[in-house]
Image (cartoon, rainbow, N blue to C red; front, top):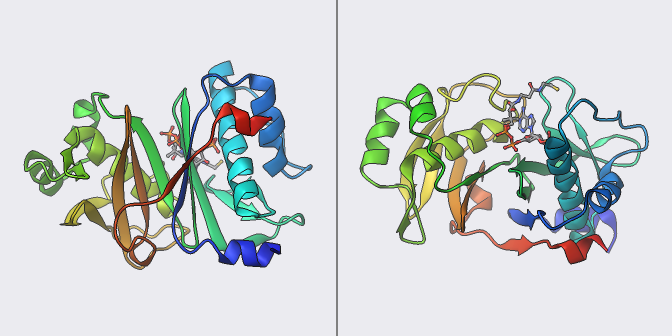
Length: 245
Ligand SMILES: CC(C)(COP(=O)(O)OP(=O)(O)OC[C@H]1O[C@@H](n2cnc3c(N)ncnc32)[C@H](O)[C@@H]1OP(=O)(O)O)[C@@H](O)C(=O)NCCC(=O)NCCS
């Protein structure tokens, strides 16, 4: 399969989860480097933990690309910092988007034919304080009704709301730099949420839609175009330390 065919085969969200606690730093870095162009500037000045997460993110992307037969590299967009998928000459692909999120022990990577945002959080994290700063009355009301659920199982509403808003902000390339208040989460149906926002980002979605997945002890929010999330649930693939060999 050639590269164009491989990219065109990504017609829905591909979610990859990589618990990387057991992996050694050198292997994460050597696999992660495969998605960096040789001219990529060195990332310096970060703690050892942050560097591990950074390389784990890139290693997860390298493995995801390999599994899907995609030949590509990533580079941060210079003004906003979201990752773009580029070819060997640094030219970005118009029909493949990626986003990643990490904790100190796991990375979530999402690939999509449309802009996509992903966020992973520990499901029992206490987000009550931060949520009061970013949630609207409408969203607080939604949370109190217990609509945040996945596969019929209720989620901690504060962390679900926080994570959903972060994924929405990342999907349009703004990240958290411009705040989360301008992204309002609305319940649609069966664990699917819509995002209302009048904030224009560098990337755009006609009908931003969100789902929240559970991967014990984490929750993962993914935001992208409604048409690539037809029935809510998203296929996920696991990456393990064996993939680094
Ligand atoms: C990106 C941001 C949402 C990260 O939140 P977080 O909870 O700490 O981290 P997460 O693990 O969920 O996400 C981090 C990833 O988001 C991606 N990201 C960075 N900026 C982004 C943006 N504007 N939109 C979407 N994704 C972005 C990156 O891939 C980053 O991982 P990396 O540094 O390993 O490449 C937040 O820190 C932010 O908005 N930062 C602003 C970035 C910025 O100002 N960049 C300026 C140009 S360099």
